[in-house]
Image (cartoon, rainbow over all chains, first blue to last red; front, side, top):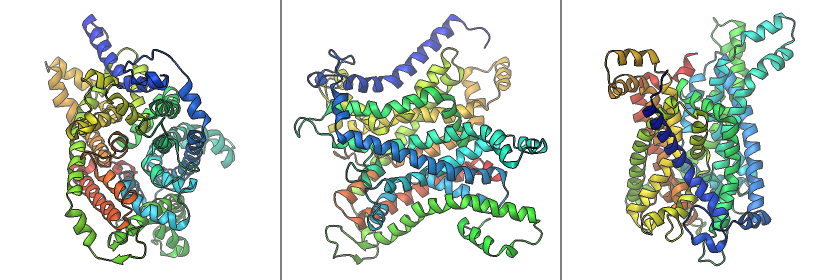
Length: 277
Length: 316
């Protein structure tokens, strides 16, 4: 598009503003609620009349939210590391090697990506109670790894296919050892794909709610999204709106950071597996 | 490999009896096969252990009378649980609600996602900002967004309730389903748009220009060039979104807890396990949901033909 008429300019500006408003208002509403004083929670305006940090200091002082927040971070990181490690091995095989069973692996990964989680909850709940995994970190890590794997395998095999593997041979011809060739040439090329995959897998673990409320029963392993349900208000009849809004904002911060810094990568990762295959 | 034998078994076999490999394979090819199977084995073991085993166990549980409150009264009862669930109005109501939410939200998301994809693809200003901001609904924790909608629709508290005369939409079946659909659409439109955007970028710009020179209107260009070329991307996006929407849980759980006839099949299954503590009925619902998802996926994959996701992976 070489020349833009003023009319087109107005058109695009309006379209952009609509997109921005629709995407941001529900988030800004949460932010606004989280800064409102308990008395002002009944004020439907988007701008708090009086600002307070009370809701944040309140939730960050009790283990009812702090402990689940630690659980969320710990469970998310461990699940992501395991899932990305196993997925890179499998994705390398899918992208680079010829072997029987490739179709089965790809089909299995697709099947699991579409799996209705609720169908797993009843049997898994029973199995975890028998194995003593119920209400432990690993009780969540194991299913998170399993459901992170399809995402990881798809995204990583798409990334691995783009790597110019001939460079490895060239490096070896120039006298590099296989280890040097891997560390100096291949690892830096593979790193962006692995980072992207790690972000996507982490976000999936971070957002999970169904498994988190099903396989935990106390704050020792409950994750942050699941913990918000157990916040208590002033009495049994009042919903603790302010604290819930503050907690919702806190668990949204990492997402905003990831999106701000890795926007391009996330877009590439989300679409590579699905469309280019 | 055309059989459905799990690859793990093959991995173990090929290690134990390498002689069984076809004789025409060179040593290098054999080593490659072995390495490939070894590399995928851990992922396959985890995926099968966490999904196939529980599903088989759920089939077994679904044939038993098993209530956690009456642990001494566990008994094999054949298909009685299935008869009970399929004869219950709650199951059919939940299935209807789930189907309504899925069909309406996926259709609207497809249209809005296409519009958003066009904006993301063609906008000339602030492309980075728009792309970043439109990723926020995708990334945000569903539960956090659901609370935002819930508070927004709470009478005398929320900005949306204030705009609509302080009704209490979440206490009325049709209106609550509307709010749930709205929350779903807001959350999933960016993902739909990204999938479509990837398809959109595969449409050659030259083709668009040529059609413009030939006098095609914008709408004609869209329906005659863009849509047909994007068909594979649209089908993939629809499949993912439909299956994802069918398992809707978080939004309903927070917004209405499934009250006032807004329960989906997933919230129904959850209630049966954690409120009724009925493992038999809960497992039966699980299996029925699994069958529904299998049917939806089969319909889509038959529609895909060669464009099935993953078919590119296999060709290499």
